[in-house]
Length: 316
Image (cartoon, rainbow, N blue to C red; front, side, top):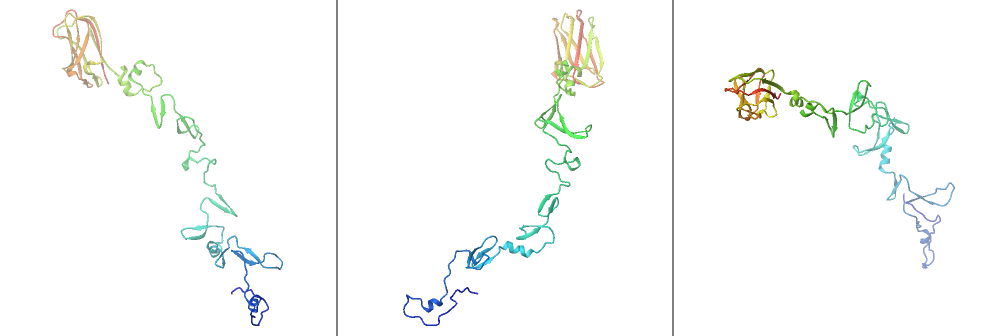
């Protein structure tokens, strides 16, 4: 209904001509009540008294002469009792407020939400078991490049220290490999011997020695040897021939090296005792296990060539 504020006693006479005096129509007119914006009229004091302005606050809203609750609070009232402990929030899929239950791992007790630690690992808590994809151990920074491994004697995961021949560079684990020179000298204790290094060293050579003490006869066969394994004679016997000349020849002295009857190289001794060697075509010669290697003296004998020894070193 419309609010009306007038005197309880109403004058039923006509107005006089003097407008400077209060006339009956003035007495009977609605009173003008002035107050601040956004207030209600009432009385907050416990006793009876004059009307007071009441402030609209909290969730209440006063808009266009209408006092109401916000839509979200009105929606709460329409949700009803969920008949279980629930928490309230905005359900964006529904476009409005709703009650939510707790998912796995959370517990709502009274007004407190807590984490159910059963089967849940957290920082500073129980170590994650191996069966759950963890290490089962509380590992600390090893302060060095290390490898995580299972120590079966200790029954635990721990750090494996890399030392000795092995080293880690970035994300690469490597082993210091020996060179052929390391194998030859045998002095290094911090490298690993690989098949390649061993094959390239003197220990991996195929050793083929021969010698004579007296001057060979014309075309004499000085060596017949059957290869026990595969090996290679480097091109022109480079780093593959050791020699000793006791008595120099009177003339140039050439030994013919044959593989299964075919010439593959020549070892020559000058009158000054200098030894040189070449392979046919200047190329390496591959020897197969079972091949027959022969060394033939010159077709014309040299009367003074004597006390000579030679060792061919084949690569394997």
